[in-house]
Amino acid sequence: MRNSVTGISRGFIIFAQVFGTMFAIIGLIAYCALLDDVIKGLGNGSNDNIVAKASAGAIMALIVYFVWKSVWSCVVIIRSMNEMDDFTLSANKWIISALSLTVGGFFTPFIISSFPNIKVSATIKPKPFLTKAFGMFMVVGAPLAMLTYGIYMRNNMGGAAQGWTIAVFAISGFLLVLGALNVGFFYQKNANQKYESSTFMKLLANTTLVIVTLELVFVMLEAVLRLLANLYRMIYEFSQNGFLWGLLALVNFMFVMIYVLFVIRLTWETITGIWADEVEFNVFEPLKDYQKDQKNSQLA
Image (cartoon, rainbow, N blue to C red; front, side):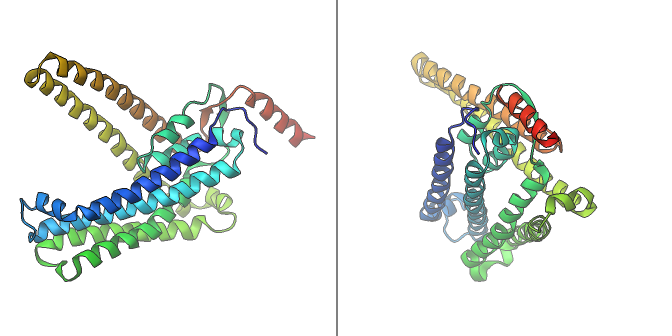
């Protein structure tokens, strides 16, 4: 049963996930269409530079991995929207936030973060849930990345391209092994109960969360770099194009700064949330009565 107490726009979250996934697919298509230009840019104007081709192939493999990741995170988040009531969704909001942020999402974490301020313990442990989800990212995405790079480079994976080839296959191979272990252990029946007593499953979960954390740290770094780029643009506009253009750049910089500060705060809260086995989250006032009723029904 769903309880309309959090003000969640489930429809908007679902729309944002579908739109974001479609945008990722369009991005992959656009990259493929502009591949020759990318190779020229990486190869100083040459289309025959093997290192530039290998770099472009590695980037394509990475994009394919994240397109698959966007697709599966969309499936997981939409399933959560459909299966969780508002109370459960509220209590586990940083899990949803982590899934969205690591594929470049903004609107879903923004909505999730807007819940009002009452404390409640999470009802789903972040580590097993995210290990299961990221296991599926890895076990499917890593072979897709290797296949993409292999098909694109074909007989040119050695020689000058050897460094990129080793990097792509080594990283993808590691993710494939870790993903296969995650799927094998965390998709089995009673996985949550087995996790509590299994040292190896906890090791898998912690290893996966290190990777998730690194991805979230990258989100924060990307936001800071965006802010610095806009700061440079503002200074450039003032010095080269006069006061009016500089003023417009200043206004844009202020908006970007607000966005970046929000992303950093939200991402940091997400990191601290997913690393705690017992997490407290900010949710809606009627949840007090709901929790009290739940405790009373269990005692009855």
